[in-house]
Image 1 (cartoon, rainbow, N blue to C red):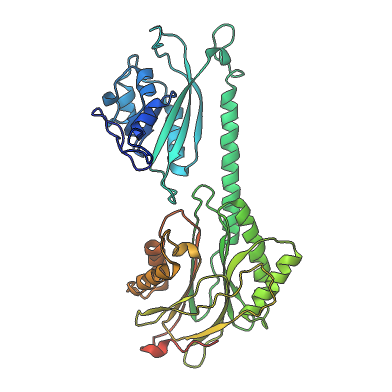
Image 2: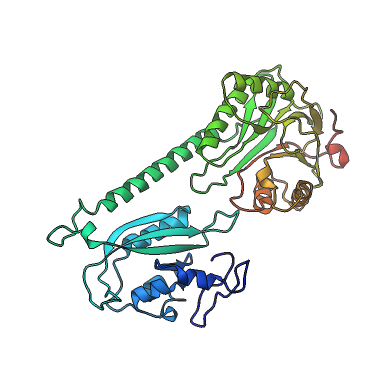
Length: 433
């Protein structure tokens, strides 16, 4: 509902005061709206109906609230209206979180002023109700608006396709929105591909978009194999949750991938070269990026991992004994600033069975909480995952640590060194740099 207030009932519910004065509350506001409106939950149960809506139908609120939409409309004198298109629109709104418009449909309700019945046409606007920071649709508001019969009927009183121009307009809007969503999903799918197989390493990736409509955003991951046997992990975050952010992300990913494949480039060098290349190509964007280079295995099966961070969050290491720690507190300058200062690098040695997690800020940032506290919560979450399999670790971290579904994009890259763990603290070597 609105600002957490309760729906109306026959007893006059919904009396939580709006901030600023006890005399003004949700019920007063809702009933003051001249346009008929009804509120439905995801199961199409009527949560509320304003005075304009109940007067339009000629039934009291207690005949509507608590019933399904079909049952509620069955109480209306003269029978329910033709609702298939309305139900389809409500279903789309619940699934996509996008407003829906339903072209005029005829429903011969008696005019409450004259009591006479005659041809009357109504169009609907279906609006999603969400909570701040959460893309899930909690309810829908259906606004009913009468359309003048003269706008849809010809001289003989027939509603003609030409005059029902609302239909073609709405259809075009739906087709355009659907095409945009399909293009956006295709773009994201072509960029965020499955990682390649890396001998001796398990690598897993996850992506969760903030925008549940287009399902695209500015976060990305990449895994690049070099001829030398080194593996390069890239994780990035361009601001934004829309198609523009996804387009910029695509450009930056291409630049970083091209540079990362060079065998002589350490992670700081990859970032510097990619930053200069992006500027030369006039890709104007700032991003938080981590580049990590994983060396071939040592004789004992351990892997040396070296990384550089451009404004991104520190990696997290999980030892084979299930202990976890955040490593490296020096983020380096944001990608895109083009500052001359040298980027720091850090190194850790992962023994067999040890894992490394790279993640974007959408995984941990919580409104009203210090980032250091959020990172500590993530570390604790990782320690509580007792399953040693990397894919289970990625799934559990994403499920337990994402604070607000839909608040921000989340990208995650996880790797694990194959082989039986050596056990003890030596499974993770001393970090240098």
